[in-house]
Image (cartoon, rainbow, N blue to C red; front, side, top):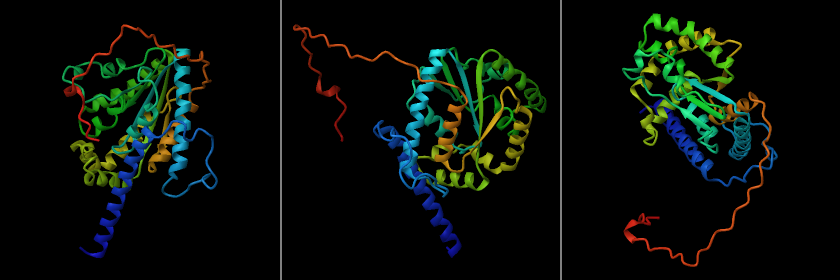
Length: 309
């Protein structure tokens, strides 16, 4: 192995370690006390971070603050009977799932749910193209986050040859009218495209290849999409050009830095729906009823999960 190859391998292993630390951060976000970071702004010296990474303490504080605002938005959506749809589109490994995870992390799944549809079945391929998506649209007081959406036709289906040229053109003819109809019906529609560079996708795919905890994320379709980077770029440009309309415009999220992308996207989402804090009656825990005749029955030892830890 020459010096250049050794340097490349060292950089790759460093990237794998960074990605693994980011995975640990995801777990920390689930576990760290909810009270952390609710005191407002960043600490001294953390006001601006222009380097590759973001200070973890600042990131967590901002994430928790924004998630607190998402709870207020959730209450507002329920209180006002709003119907909200957010589309997340972007290349493979662009970070869409990570942002969706942070949005839904502390929200009520009965109010905010994720629609991540698999490839259409034989029956669904004979239906009106938008039909299987319509069934996932929200009722009043609900938010639905689409992890990829009807824009599959403008992206993967077109690039990989899963639709005909006629179907592709019909999609562009129909989708503006379809989205205008949704908006006229009172639905709030927000569309995000997560943008990463060629080098960044390459690096993320490499980390998945070398990280056994993430290797499952790489499908044959993902690998083929890597080969067709330029074709996907042209498809994305055409999609935005032909479907960026006043009623449902596109928003591009710079997603090379995952943490910044998460915070920026959540902050922007909150700015798109005017909301206020909904007042609730104070929660009072009722007294537990004690029955003098109640005796708790024994539990057989073999019913318990083994105490390995």
